[in-house]
Length: 190
Image 1: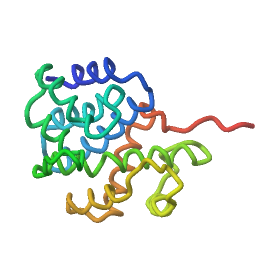
Image 2: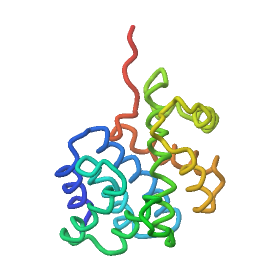
Image 3: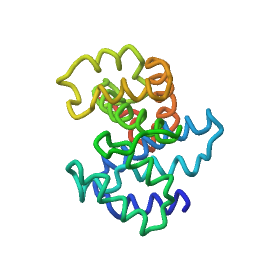
Image 4: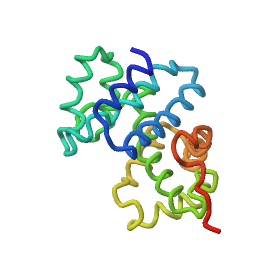
């Protein structure tokens, strides 16, 4: 499978622009880690893109991603990618063992939080987001309530990286694709 085929699957199952951008944001972070660790960038991109492809048709645990996995198997998605997608859900019973599995989990919730923080910045831009602002918003339980802070903390720990370094790394990765993610800034009212 190539990235274009994976993206077509996302677009087939995901109608929400926000969820599509989330897949792209997670992809940006995961691929940056693939580059850092000299891993297969295409495989990691496909995994990140497809990790929530079934969210709109299976929005409840444990249906997501369990009921999506056979769909991906039927589309020829490799067992390694499907396993990583299953492992990103704590309730799946699939432990995170590989670097890919740990990276996907570590980047998923963080990418969502970084996107949410970007939206509340004056210029609506990832370029305005920094580590201190992320740490502050992590403490604010009312902000982006659906983002699981424990998963962010646990993800960095499982990946074996310092949380601040992980946050900074993902900010940089998302900045590199800011326009595609809709996070390059909005014109300010005059």
